[in-house]
Length: 571
Image 1 (tube, helix red, strand yellow):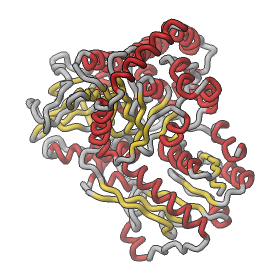
Image 2 (spheres, helix red, strand yellow; image 1 turned 90 degrees about the vertical axis):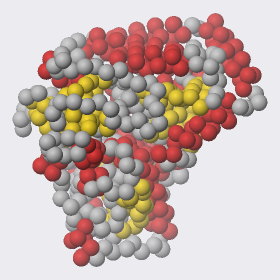
Image 3 (cartoon, one colour; image 1 turned 180 degrees about the horizontal axis):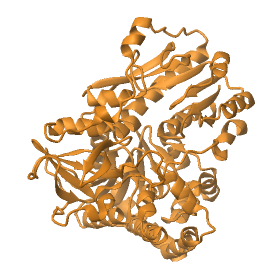
């Protein structure tokens, strides 16, 4: 079929639904619901879709469209659940199971006939954004594919929702008053539920050091103690630790509150960077443990562990963005991992984002964004170069979630790339006005060929895990739930280390790297790429600074971007 996706943003779920439908042979167009109903009407007219699907929608589809076409809405809740804050209420309430429903658009919100739904388990430690990109996205894709199949059959009759159930299932938009933390009485677990239900948007509004902040991200702390509830007791790797009535919690990011209508920027930054000079010098910086004992509950964004011949270097940064400091700390950990007597070194292997490359928020907030961009891209390059130069063992990138731009190149620098089913790769820099670096001109063509590398970087469209394997960007699709990924990666890595041709593969890898270096040194690729990037960063005539600013400030586009709008028409 030809299917038109209507979405409020080309976000992770919209991209995944697009890729999954294309993988199954459907042609798919996309139009963004940005307040211009006429643009949506024109897209429907031009593409004449057989079905309209809305993977993520915060506004209503015009009545004249849903009356003339079957429009299926993806709601992140089971049948009967209604309202705009479904996941927020679910996580605040501590639910252990939930679901995603695909229902038909009607005049009343979430009240249409049910075409399909898929249940899901809610992991106890996941925040809203992580849950949304993991279990919710898995369930949403399952439900969408089933609904599309049922619609295509022409025989399925969707299930009506009864008026009594519709009335009982309505839950309103969750306001900040419902999210507020009472540090004098709320337990650590209560605070963590509040934080996780607001991550990554809208955050929990709170007062700290005489200013108003939105708190983002919550992790428990089982050892550090001291101070009155709510007080800062430590910092670590950009995060802050605050005392509670029965323990402490780590908060990774802060976003300043602004008066309505204020033109001052408000975007998330590592907590210590957001606080800046407000952070008391008396608050100690405690080291981040690289090796966490079993059962330890604390915050650490980089972890190393070993299982026999396999070393695993886990890392997890909010939104997949990697600042200069984060890149340097990860490189230090990688170099440590390379000193260990292992045969296989795994990078990643955790749920949610692998990496999205340089940290645009930190860059935007810098005193000199161009200089910070330059430092950040060099730090990313150093990390990728270290992976490319590892010739005494095999390396594996295990992607539990999405990757983009330099994060894709970091993954592809390894000998093998394993993607969890549902991971989406965006191997391009174009939409941010960048040529790109991270040795992509060496890494990508050696996997997919020169012409395909050019197409991928210029089309600026997402690639599914399945398609990545077909193109040669990845070796495996791992069909594991987000919570099961680590165990599956460890099992497969142990098999790789024990494979009979292991020594031969390492020797061949080393020989190929030496041959490639003799033909064109990695430094030449780096120099050529950075010549373009320096112009992108420092030349005021280049579009990057404006694109970065709009992205960081979440400025809403007025129209569907051309590279997306062309999709349905090109097909």
